[in-house]
Amino acid sequence: MIDIILHYKWKYISFLNSDDTYGRSAQQQFTALAAENDICVGITHTISLASDADDYDDVMDELLGMQKSKHATVVILFVQLEMVKNIFSAASRMKAGRKFIWIGSDGWGNYGEMAIEGNEEVAVGSFTVIPSSETLPDFNSYFRSLTPATSDNPWLPVFLNHYGACSMPDDCENSTLRAIDSDLTSHETLVMDAVYAFAYALHSMCHAQCGEPVEDCATCLNLSADSGELVDYLLSTSFDSLANGRVSFTENGDISGRYTIKNLQKFDDGYKFVQVGKWSDNVHVTSETVIGQLMPWYVEVDDVTGAPISVCSLPCIERHSIQIISRGGMPDDCENSTLRAIDSDLTSHETLVMDAVYAFAYALHSMCHAQCGEPVEDCATCLNLSADSGELVDYLLSTSFDSLANGRVSFTENGDVSGRYTIKNLQKFDDGYKFVQVGKWNDNVHVTSETVIGQLMPWYVEVDDVTGAPISVCSLPCKPGERRYVIPDNPCCWECIKCQPFEIVINNNTECSSCWDLEHDPFVSQRIHV
Image (cartoon, rainbow, N blue to C red; front, side, top):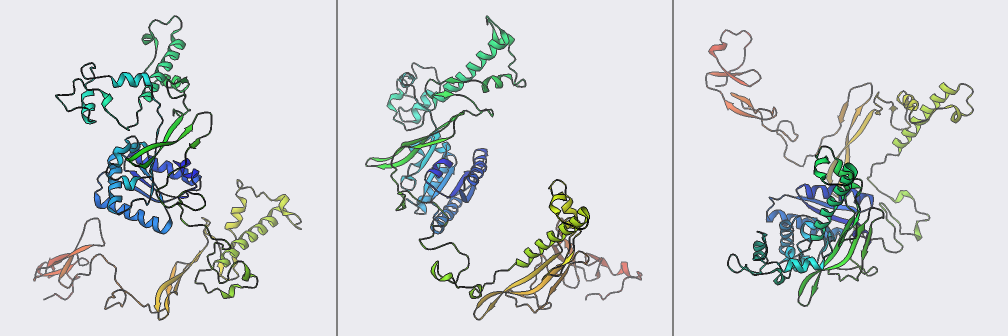
């Protein structure tokens, strides 16, 4: 999938996966490989098996928003059959026909047109990547000649009934698979390869451990799962498949990858998945993507490349450059422009950069004098500045100096600089909105933290009548004559319970106690609520 994306120079991708091991592991591997190949992943969604139509509509709405604002056309669908049907149904409901290029995994790609039935117009142009499996004509001829009358396979009548060759239980007895015209991907030769791999591994293991002549391997081989010996023989097995080329394994036990790339295309008589390419990752060669035909696109294409684009931002047009702040045109009239023309509210941190440079300068100065002596002619030859030594760090931690702009600079034992923060508040004015400095926070190494908010704040939410500031609490204070019942495991929340007329609130307003019980208590003296 990554190589298809690179082939068409797509740079901004969305990724939908099922909430199971199949989908989650795919998302993790895809995002890692995407980052390595300079591909950005804009949206990732792990879709629950319990998701309903509204959930799918929400996902589709987000994709449409991203497609409109960011030109994000390509969507990876690493999901199973039923889930992709729900995704395409949501796309149909949201009128998303011919908006996206879907790239699908074998979880639904193996099912061909069955996966997109009823939603062909939103799925047209989709790519699927499925394991390559060539066919054996002799086996196909034999397999298609089987009937329930000539085969003892109990699942054959069920298969024939499901794909429309007959109706159980009456008329399947003499039906054959010849009547079935299916676009389902056939993987029988991959099963054959798996059987042959074990056969070759067991053959090699038997000859190595039992000697010649071999009469009964079963009695001399150690085939327990704990021994792991058979795995070693499997990993070293290599043979020519009956249909799929050379079969061999990596050191991790993966078979060399071979995938078929299909594309859903529209014809006069309907929609059909057409093979358009192959992907190979042989153990001894690098991966190779071969897409061998001119593709019919069903979404808008780029005038230059003739293929769709899927990017976050379009390239800058000629004689334009990417700029964050500018008050001049490019490139003609910038020669005599100055920064005075820029009225920006961006926070400037250049003096912090100066402080960092000075900190290293002071530390190196102290280290040089301590280790090289006087007079100092060439510190570079006598100082140990390797990262492993950690000596420079020790001198940095003991450095202390007056900044050109920010007061005293010193470090904690953990290497943190004394904290100084500015507090700003977004306020509304007649001419617009602006962040206004309203306070400072200071955590000098030698003093406690201090927050100074130095102006009367304009609030834009409801305020408390007493404090004149907003409140943010779980529970309001209880009224006189009420006790607090604190909710377990949440000390910020409570319920207010009214005491009896003859009771008084005690113990920090958490208990009601009878006045008679407190009559002789010298420490209780409070007004009783009447």
